[in-house]
Structure formats: structure tokens, C-alpha cells
Amino acid sequence: MNSLAGKTVFVAGHRGLVGSALKRRLRDEDCEILTATRAELDLRDQAAVRAWMRDRRPDAVFLAAAKVGGILANATYPADFLYENLMIEANVIEAAFREDVAKLLFLGSSCIYPKFAEQPIVESSLLTGSLEPTNEWYAVAKIAGIKLAQAYRQQHGRDFISAMPTNLYGPGDNFDLTSSHVLPALIRKAHEAKRDGAKEMVIWGTGSPRREFLHVDDCADACVHLMKTYSDAEHVNVGSGEDIAIYDLTRLVCDVVGFEGEIVRDPTKPDGTPRKLMSADKLRGLGWAPKVPLRHGIAATYAWFREHVADA
Image 1 (cartoon, rainbow, N blue to C red):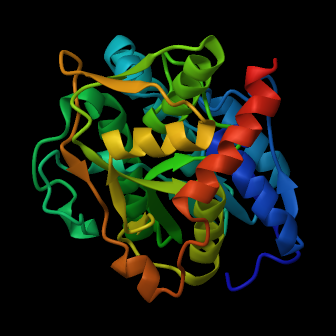
Image 2 (cartoon, rainbow, N blue to C red):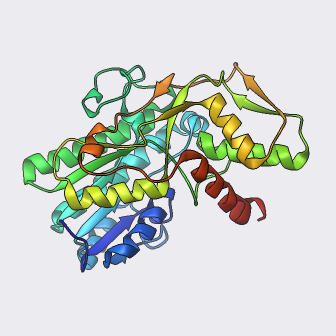
């Protein structure tokens, strides 16, 4: 699928962080974009998904729908994270096969890799060690999605591929402190600390773990690139190729937001995986590289937060 021009493209999960970015990116591809809200289509309902796909007959599918959240959400709702993600991916992939969808891209997560995988993490590290316990439910579901896409390729010859994004951020992110990921949580904490005139801001853990971040618009661009150029069983890492310590990230966020108080670390809270940097070699070899620098991306995301979340 060298071009999406003239094609009908279904973005499953179009209201989410990645899905909304895919919608923005696909406007440049001269294609018809299909979407469905949760009220219109429950992706956990097998019969409903099959009927919807049969009626619309998309040429391509970006499977970006998922139940997502941070450490606290994973610990609180393990059954939901495992069951809902398994149902979503199984129903959409099976329906895409039955309705002869030409190409499908399944979006996973970097949490699929072993907790102590050698850094930077190459794609072949999958299933070579134990997972990080704080998000294993989500990780197991995403690993199943990768394997499901591979199984349909092997058994039925379907052109189903998988992309594994790193930690994403950007407009449309979740800033709820009970369920958000680290970067949007830091943006909100720093904003509220500045607003309230606080003298300090507390972050979870020691601040030493290192994480990689990618602006969601870069992720969407990479996924469109893969949809048009990549066809193989192995998943592809989608990341920036650079990481940063959480404490240093916090300082960067505070600088962008304008909070000048003290950053206090709470070592009684979990750190999660010590380091998680994915190798970007495979994607770079396919001719793609990110365009949004981290500081610029954080500033743009904070501007979106202030307009759409903080003022509301």
C-alpha cells in the first residue's frame, strides 16, 4: 500500500491520543477517514464489530483503540486492562480478516518488553524476560495483539503489521492525576503548584528512572509511513531514540510551566522499570525520523492543556 490516496481508512480509537493524531495526519493523504464513537460501536462486542466492518468495508485499519493508563490505573483495574484490550484487538483483527481489509496496523506499547531488557531495546527482545509488574496486564494484552497480527499473516497471508510506540504525549492527552501517564501528570502538577503559589512539588519515586518520549504527531506520521512502506511479521519500535531521567524531565516541565519551587521526591512510591529506551534503528532504516524536539513538544502540550483543560 504505497499510497492511501483514494482509500477508505478506519481509525479505531479516533478520540484517543494517538487516534486523534492519526486523523490529523491522514487529512494530508487524500483518503476517506472512517470513525466510530463508543456509542456508535462497542469494539468489545464481536457481532457489532463484524457488522460494522461488513457495512463499511475499509481498505486499511489503524487499530489505535485501547484502554490505557499509568501505574495507579493498572494496579487498580487489572481485569479491565486485560479483558477490554484483548476483546478490542481480537474483534477488530478478526473482522478485518473476514472483510478482506487490505492492510491493518496494530498499535502496541513499549511496556511489552521485559523489565530488565538490554538497552536500547531491540524488537527481538520481546518475550526474553519477565515483565514490569506494575503494568503487566496491559503488556500481556498488547503482546497478544502482536501475536494475533502475526498469526493472521502466517495462517491467512494477511498484511497485518504492528508498531510499538514509546511514551507518547501531546494535544488530547489525559491529565487526570489518577490515571494519566508521567508527562501529562507532571504538566498538571507543575501548573497547579504554580497557580497555588506552592513552595514545593512532589513526584513519585526517586526520579532516577529514565524514559523515552515522542510527540504524538510524530507517532502518527511514523504509523502512516509504516502503513505505506512496511510489510513484515516483526513489530517496529516507534520512538525518539533518546531518553531522560524523570527528575530531569520534571525540571524541564517546571521550567516550561514557570514553576520555581522545590521538586521533592517520594521514594515510598514505585519507580517502575529502571530504564526503557527503545532502539530506533529499524524505523530509521525504513526512512523515518522524528521532527518535534522534547522541549518544543512540552511547551505546545502545555499550551493545549491551558486552553482545553486548565481553564475548563
